[in-house]
Image (spheres, rainbow, N blue to C red):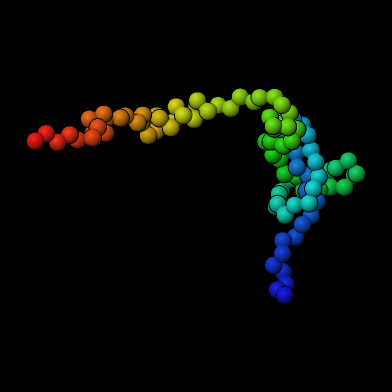
Length: 95
């Protein structure tokens, strides 16, 4: 069996920035930030945008996502796709 190939698991605090919710779990994520947890110990801190406290599936509330802005940005960058009906139409052979 090879040595030193398995990741090192340690307690890490994940903090949901949108819902002001935090939880501690075992993880291999590397972070530079730390936080003092409820038990008085200092743990690495990983910030996340979504968790079970803010995800629409778990909360039952709909969160509006700016998809229109992304579509408009895509169309500005790459242009609107134009359909050339003459080239798409099957060629008819008249004999």
